[in-house]
Length: 513
Image (cartoon, rainbow, N blue to C red):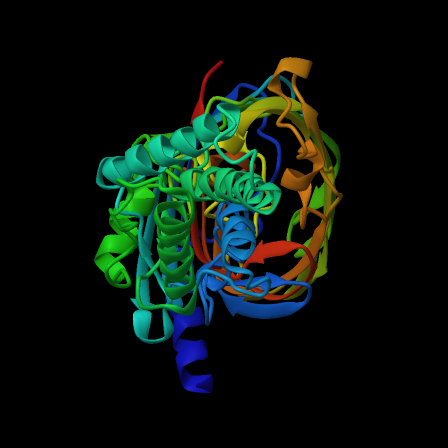
């Protein structure tokens, strides 16, 4: 290893100009110069951190008994089935669901910075972002008691006969057919009341376009058997005790549990109660552009033959919502931008002597509020129903970060650099954009769940900085370049992607005036 390092250092010494003394890329640009920035990053993750624990990215779509735990819209169906069957603990179960997911983001940034004076630099950057999310949902129906709803057309004959029979019983009561037998009349009234309630719950479960469940009990399940028994008992009572005939059609329930393909198809149907596409999501679009000013406070770095010294600069920037936000009709969707304006302040200081040194960075981002079209549900409920879609005004939590980047020079222009960063994000605040956007019974604040978080990142890389003609006696094109691998090693609080990132940077300087 030592021989490799010495050879790398020797090669860098041969390639570097003899008078080159800088190593770290400066923040500012000398007066009359323009700097062209070409930065890139490849980031991927298939896990995330939540409450300090690492878990698969698809953890929110993993369940030993998929039902209303991941499909909240089935909660109403569970309640109706409990009333119909007298099984209060019954829950629809589609089987065991396991989900694997991976996200990849590529980012290329084109930036330009112009030195107005030796201390003041104006800059702007625009990224091009490509996101790709892959997911695989595997459903094992071995323990399932539910399947796909057959649909209103399949139930039409059943409800037509049921409605006619209940109307006939009501007509006989109104006509006084049972007045001579008070006990029979009381039984008829109770049957009509119970039958009407039964019809209301069953129609709401199977056929009502506003409440019908996407999944219902299979005919062979305990709930399916109990529903069929209720229907048979009602048919017998109407015909035998009250002379109301013509109700003989059985109710139609799910024939069998759904498999993975059918489950994905049903939750993806446009116009369906969920309406979430689960196929690979690819988005290529510009990201959030930024512009700002950099002020060099001190520059006593690599003066003369002395390596090291001190250098400090402060940057102020505005980041604009020029990117594309994540789509609400996509599972695990990623956008190319955040959708809101940020105002940032960053302080950078370099300190070193000889071959050793470090860069320290501190930053604060004030993230301004913006309106978003989202499903008003916690981020841990990715299958929230389409009727929760609304406009929410979200005020993202501000971000504070601190970083230390120590380095060791292999040559005057080349160094190995480490990185340790800690960032902290405050909790988001959310409210409905207007009174008309409110979803009854659902507070907008649920979309801000798990938003407060902190994370620690570490990295290692290599940097090259040759000031060339920017220094007296220098020669050659001024160039800054670097490469770094960085990853999250720990996070706490809310949801944080367990990112692995490869970053590269190239900066070229040219005379302007």
